[in-house]
Length: 344
Image 1 (cartoon, helix red, strand yellow):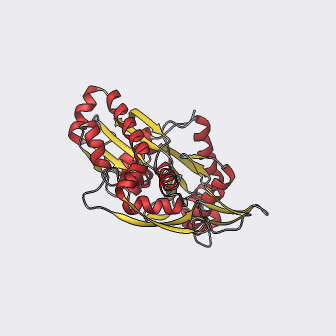
Image 2 (cartoon, rainbow, N blue to C red; image 1 turned 60 degrees about the vertical axis):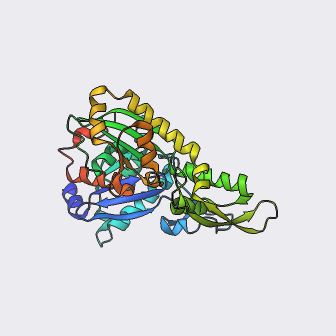
Image 3 (tube, one colour; image 1 turned 90 degrees about the horizontal axis):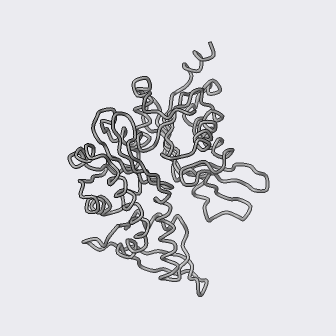
């Protein structure tokens, strides 16, 4: 009886619980939430002040007793209680009705490949405690491949590279399973850190994470571009302590992020080298698909193609590939059950 009530008043959802952003797909409605995975907390009272977009606006602008916390680090939960409250907030946003207290959705949620059993269980428990009646876990590269409409259940090789905020997942998929995979804790946020460090070393300029992210998006590249791109960055002069502006170019940003980009390229090459010959022949025809925000770095696809000698292209709307994959699984749970992660 209760289960029937929950089904009536709940909207099943797919979640890409990312280090940087959380995206939520609602069955029959599409992606309705795309907000930063950030929670602002008053440390004096332990009260949560805001979540998502509102919390992000507070970064660097709050008194010392108010902190903006990221409850996920490198794609895994670092603060269980805050993650649970963040998820509950998003669930309530989805189920805005007079009967929201009866909402107990079924949830499909992506997790990085290679996480431990404890980390997996933490995700499942947090989602259940936030209000889910049933939780299905799927590895993020599998979800990204499904979101990119790759034929993952067929006997052909599919290679996906998902560069998120905290982690990069590289996987070769065939017959509904991951044949070879790597999970690297180098991704978008590490590139932001690289830019912060570069500005400090080269310009003696202190900038924040938000500024670094904006630089990466506006002129970020893996190599100098044909048409030179520049942007003005503002920060604090480390010598005088006063405000300072400098002009930075795409070639300087590519120099800043080179170590992170090279680490990802090396990981992609190692997965290609471990892929069985029969599947390699499929990849030379079908190519490598890039997903996640980090893949939008200018010239990245060309760099992967040069390093692997395999055609490489961006997935359609790379930022939403994982959550779209979770949505497709949600719509077809029974037929795609074999690709889900089964806890021991």
